[in-house]
Length: 161
Image (cartoon, rainbow, N blue to C red; front, side, top):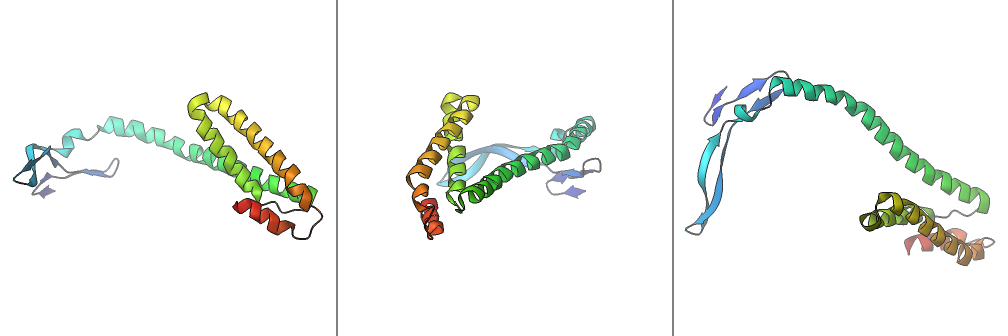
């Protein structure tokens, strides 16, 4: 199709169309921005070849298995959080809403420490630090409220603090 900006080509192989663009440098003249040293770049000349498009289309077949694996990884993380909540409730009969905060603290520590210590050292260190924080919370706060009726409100206060 012919347009004022040049010819637009349609390729049925990847359903792409090309259109050119004016490329140049921006400058300030007379207090206004103008384009200098410009030229027209034909989009058909920078479009990948049919062989490159076919090669990329073959790699698209991996997109679905990778998405499934990413979904399983996310679901396993949510399962670990849910299993931890049900385990805590089953053992102590306290709905401990601070569990999600500890999970978030562990992820934050792992990401923060990975810049200096590397990924493989920061993950176990973050888990150990969060386990120590959980132990301190358990011994100082939660054991005091096991037999009280207002255990849920105390745990919610811990969650929001």
